[in-house]
Image (cartoon, rainbow, N blue to C red; front, side, top):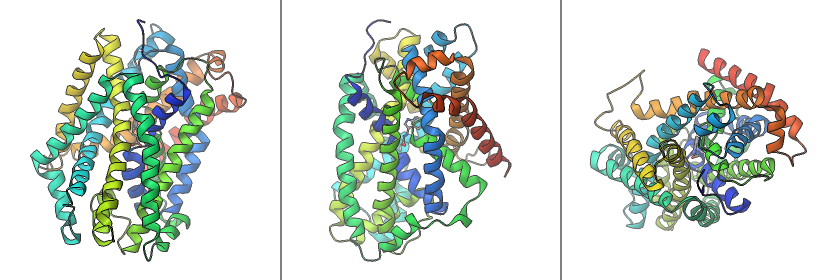
Length: 439
Ligand code: TRP
């Protein structure tokens, strides 16, 4: 391979991984899923999944990339030459592109709200639902914001792995934590915020259904960027002999911590103003502007908050686009710039469909869902679990144990991790998926 770009050091790799993990999944998806699935009860199941088997699965995905030092498709050509495993790489690339296409639409809304906040034109309380429907459904507005978001994503990638991905993540991640902490202080200072904290701490197990459990698993995969070749692709930019277990545990801890911080920033404010947390996907874009319009200094905090959401989203979208860029660049021997343009254009076409499916195409439904919802639910509840399942089967049953140990050589826990990858994770993923689909 000619001069593959790489991360400068393990801190850079960690920041890039954390940047990929923390995103709209934490700030937009997690709060509304938790709001509709019993609050604390959902959090407990979610955290159990992350620590029981998502970290080992993430390690499995990572070792594939690190060992092969290649893109999601090329990795299987190298590790399992002449087998059908390479088609799994195609599933990953397509999956990543599908996630990116609806992700860019939501990323676009975030930019739209950030501009509204900066220009002090966030809606007042009675206008908030109306404004949201304008933001998402008036064609030009949402097409433009989607386009600008995708364009910003590609511009960062132009600067390369070290110069673009790593540098951005190193600056943006610490800033993101700072911003969210400021917002938390404000949220906790509101009168009536304690009910929100109660919601985060007191589990309501009666709200748990089979679907809740499947959603928690899907959310854990989504939030940790598992099962779409992202971890694999980033791992291929990490030089060997790193402590993989520590690296991915740190990533998972940072991501989970941030999801909880996001809950702490959002729920107390939502409860303080007496609105319901079970609003669904509109929680971030309808309820929060309402909250901001009612509190003192609201416009200032709105800017901080939507800036945080934007930073989180862009460091994740670059990791999704990079899966396709590495694949196209390496497999079709294309220069990086050209590969970025080709992959972005491909994503743009799908993103336009997702964007329009909130407006003019809203009555066009496949399997009873709009294109946007279909992409969101099939990737999280279907492609990611299947991708994760194939990954653990590959590492547990196809790769040699010694090859796996070789990649995580410094870990004392390697036997336990290997056992989870080989037996526990496949059984758990299959049973949760079957259980969730049946009911
Ligand atoms: N983890 C990101 C978030 O929480 C989204 C993301 C980035 C992702 N790369 C991924 C999701 C790969 C699934 C697979 O917002």
